[in-house]
Image (cartoon, rainbow, N blue to C red; front, top):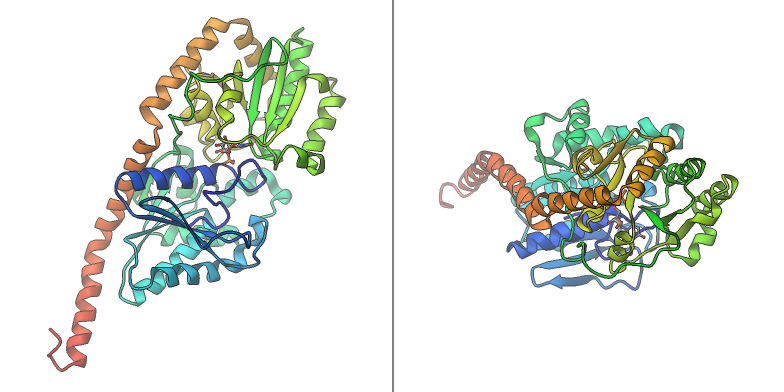
Length: 425
Ligand code: UDP
């Protein structure tokens, strides 16, 4: 696994640490549990990090020095992907893996580069790619605010066309990939999953500040739509409901929220809308505490502008909590409208408020939705199932490569034969 900015060992909730970190950590562990030997390569962003950290007998995280040893925003990491590839190839030595799996477009570049070097040394490696997010979608929604490097769209499409197999996480992504020129025949779907041992309906429940509670969880970046949830609180108040609090989880630590411009923007907005007394910015919440926070909610609101996948709705459903989700990206697949939660149009605080009002005024129905959500994630979204789906994609990549690899082996055998005048075989 290559995950340049998103270490499986990082704390979550900061601007660049969220779903990808969880995905790489959990998928790698589930594959290791299935008997695969897995190594995760990630960029060293702290001098104190050890070179290698073993987290399971078959799973190791390797910190590769690529660029400055310190925090670098992910949108500035492109120049260091060559160095990352070098570090990976060096670590492989004579023992290249069957598969290198890139996560995010820049890791895809490093994975392709490492595989190319390994292939030319006669050690074939198949490249599988999961994008997690696509530059085309980001550009469409963020326009001039998009801070991705200008080469992203071109390089991302190149990664899509060059990888042996692409693993998309939802059906919406498959359409986007087709539009980028990636043939559907090279795309498999394996969604993200959820840790069903950690996230479950039973367990500690955090105390509420009001009769009803809505929770929103995500990195504090504008596209996560936390402001939509705050605006919905104003609309709820206009509907006569001031017994509902909104708890926003995310950010790079509780104390650091004072310096977090997005947290300040949200706080100011809540105050301006007259709902500052019922909007709580909790800052970062650890994995261990997250289930208790989710369980304390009548409903979890996910109101992003767009969402490549969205693990939070799965975590909420696993805790038996219904989800109010903007009908975008992966949320269209994971949340079933009227069964495990409600879909609302994107960027529509009025619709979010109406959905919250419906749920808090009919707790029996909300409980039923939560129960359905729990059964849905249990049946479809365990990491062991996702690992099995991913393994199928790996097998497909290896099977497609077999004839080419045999040809390479034949060619190098022929070369050896030629160079030794027929004695090598
Ligand atoms: N998360 C967390 N603590 C926080 C904020 C977020 O553990 O303070 C986790 C959250 O529970 C989820 C992940 O970060 O597992 C966010 O993933 P998601 O796919 O919803 O969003 P992304 O970060 O990929 O945009």
